[in-house]
Every structure is written in structure tokens, then in C-alpha cells.
Image 1 (cartoon, rainbow, N blue to C red):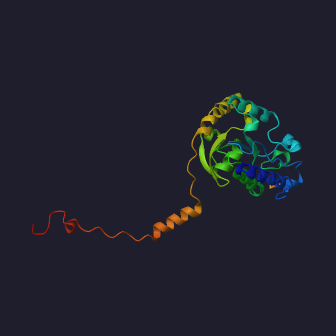
Image 2 (spheres, rainbow, N blue to C red):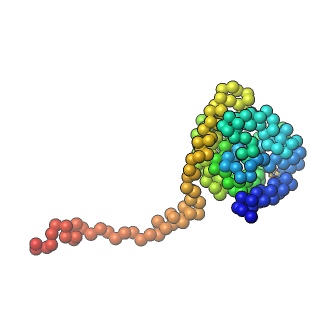
Image 3 (tube, protein in one colour):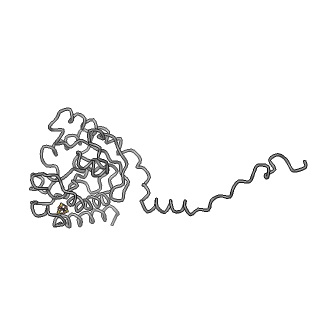
Length: 235
Ligand code: SF4
């Protein structure tokens, strides 16, 4: 079995685990979990916030008007839904689309990290403020960070992260739609770009720092006249 096939099988096993997940209270009110959908071997992943009402009923991500716009923009850059993987940070719908609570995020985000580890994307596009702030670890709003790729470690991989407006926001405001379209246009070049070298883990940084601390200090340099720079004594 090839590496890709093995990863696909692991992803199917993960899907089965998530579909019965009861790690947070959202399992009590959801209809279906929304694991995500698309190419299990995708170079490009999109991550939104949480399923909405229609996604919750169908068990699929981005199926409404926002999903249709996402599809259109993919086609404009020569891709389709089948080429990418689309999911959310939260796999179960918060009631009435309320903001996810910190405990729910903490319970659910390991599923996303596992998805990234198994799919091995090169580029992860965060859709909207919530997913962007959470995955970049930076509270700066989407309006200021959109369209500028960042490098982050996610699911044990170094990836390019590209913050984008949420397609739902683009549907509400034509100017946002045009900015989203312009940011989408940068994706093909980003997919071609060489991935940065993996960032060292916290443990590796600690180890390197302790080596520096423990290293013996270099011997003091002898004075210049001890080296005979000015000729042999008596010469
Ligand atoms: S939101 Fe995530 S952690 Fe909570 S029940 Fe659903 S799948 Fe499990």
C-alpha cells in the first residue's frame, strides 16, 4: 500500500471517529457532524469556522450560497472542489450559529490537526476572522491580514497559511467579493512556491539553547605581542 493510500485509510478511520464524537456539548444539538470533504491528497485546504444550518443537516461543508461562491472562485483559478479539501475548525454546529466556546474549540481542534497531518496540504486558506485568528494565533482582524501568506506549523507540518475573507461576507458586500477574488488569484503561485524548511519544535529550541549555555567559553585571545605579530623577539 502506498503512503497516500495508507493516509487515505487513516482519514476514513478518522471520519468514523469524528462522526460519533461526543467530546463537547455540541454533540447534543447537532444533526450530523461535518467532517469536511474533498481530495484526501489535496495540496490546498480551506478551513472555515463551523457548520451552519444546511451543513448540519447534510453533513457536508459549504453547501449553501457561500459554498457556491467558493466553487466559482475555484473554477476561476483553474481548480474544482474535487482538487481541494474543505472543512471547519468545529465539526458540529453551535446552536443558532453562536460563537464557539473556548472549551469546544479545545475539544475539537485536534481533529483538524489530524486532518492536516494526514492530507499533507501545502497551502491552508483560513476563511474569515475566527479561523484566521485561531490558526495564526494572532488577534489581528482579517481585514488587515487577508491576502498575505504566512508560514505556520499546523498538525506537525509547516504550511503556507493564506487568510481570506469568508465567502459569506463576500456575498454581503461587493467590495469584499472583489478582494476575495483578487486574493484567490494569488493561490496558484503560492501552490508552486517551495515550502519553507520545517520550523524547529519548542523542544528542539530548548535543547539548542541549553547547548549554548553549557558550551565552554572560548579561551581568551592572547595579546597581539604574544603571537609575534611584530617579529621574533630580538629580530
Ligand atoms: S464539536 Fe468537535 S469536539 Fe465537539 S462534539 Fe462535535 S466533533 Fe466532537
